[in-house]
Length: 489
Image 1 (cartoon, rainbow, N blue to C red):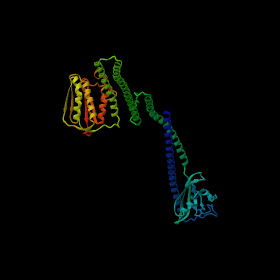
Image 2: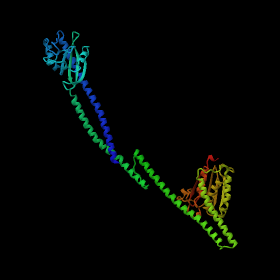
Image 3: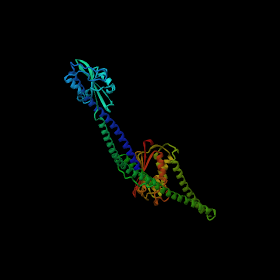
Image 4: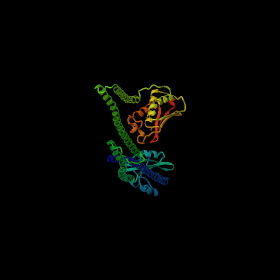
């Protein structure tokens, strides 16, 4: 991973640097060339105007005559300073200089006045320059000089005498040092690019290390998570996207750990539940079978004993029926497609009915049930039988876990029903799971519990939009609270 990221970063940085360098280099060279030409053009223009002005002053009163044929120069009468100035024209102009008429016939050409010239010896585009000059303009031509083998400028300006244009001064000069400067700039650019490429490799390696180190940790963490080790953490603390990803992986690790612990807990509860249910089912089945065998084999013939055996078998069959019904009841309540019969009813009547059913069990332990209602009528929509079962389950639970001669309190106040006992309470370890399907508190008071009662009560409450929760302190008692919302009224 590290090598791949390093390679990609290096390629990206290098490509971006090269493109940037080409763009900047092209812009720089273009600006440099244009600036050099501009400066040189200004200098040539100043020279040309100065020379043309001087010649005009010297030529006033003197007539320039072209020689016989094109390209002839110097066949003219020069007197005093005019001739000397003309013969040193190239030196004065510090470049190649010509004086031509409108037809491009040479009138004079510096120190080369004794040589013969052809039209091709003039600068390129000389005809266009001369044509513009004879309109009274100072004009320029930029091209590559075959003679000088370099970029060159040609400036043309009119020579005036007595208010008339008598000739055109052409000065032809290379843009000195341009190629050398461009080459030097290009060399410096290449050196700069090379240094920048080295720096980009170093920088990309450093950045790759910054990226790959936490990525490697996250990869290893993910591998541990995939192998089932949910306690591993990335240990990365960064305030950026990588840090956010690391936090997400740590959160996933914590959630997987919690899910694994929950799954193990549920599996253990399921095993305990199956063990408990197996015992609960085996005991009545064994009793019924033993009793039937004794009756069938004629071991028991006394009518009183036979009746007692029948009674025992009936009780055990009822116990089996209770277990089966609990399973079916929970299965139905957890099925979202199962509809319960809702009708308008009085919760006070349901509570009183539940109290009557639980009074026998309470009497056996000499437990007093006290109730306090803030009203006689508490109307709501619900299934009478299911709500009675819900309250009766919680009341039976309160009686089961209460000590003899204690009291149980049932309070209705402000759409809230509380069933409170003074019994053994629930430990902190057991409390979070009291409504779970396979959970049963292991105690002497709950030896025959299946762990389905409170689960069924919770499901009935959910189907009636009742918020059922518990509050408990070990050895101080437990309170079950039923909160009815506005939708229930």
